[in-house]
Image 1 (cartoon, rainbow, N blue to C red):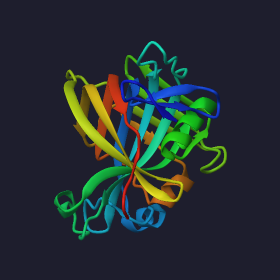
Image 2 (cartoon, rainbow, N blue to C red):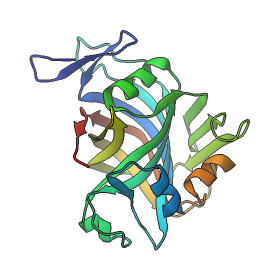
Image 3 (cartoon, rainbow, N blue to C red):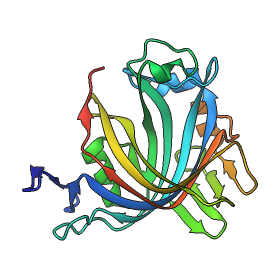
Image 4 (tube, rainbow, N blue to C red):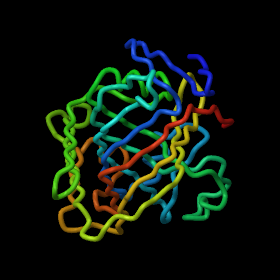
Length: 254
């Protein structure tokens, strides 16, 4: 890893690919947030973060299918990685909160998302996530399709339940999406430390409440048990042309 003349960080991956941080990304995505048992979530979270409580004993989990259009290549010297598909299992979490009261954590701690599982479709993308940020990426058989009806994700369920698959369909909203610009943080474990990574996200994204016609979620029994999931969407998220800048991770005190 070394600094460029413009204060951007160049990183050489073990696969021989070189990327530049902040990493420039563009993608389509469709996801849902579902309720989950907080006791199950706390069992898989690292020390230093706790699950976001939305009701007594209830947290939530975000499941998102992502079809990348561009990964890197933000300047002329950077080729970037070939596009790939990804399925993210993220636990909304809080760092530094002194309370577990539902929603009170929003005013008492730092909100982010702990990345629990992140299967992808290419080896370079596995190296990218693990070596730069400690993301729990692994190679899997995933198909993410952004079609006229919405974003459809299918994940081979070898890790969770043998031959079962995970299916997520998020319908294209009838109303136009809203232009959004926000920063979100993710938490991971890397080299034994808790890491926080910020991402600046821009694009037309639709956010809806509850289930909708055309939105469907099927998870394997093993994943549902591990995280205590109730596969009924609380919210849904859709964007067909989203851009992001993913920054270098920062070690945080636990």
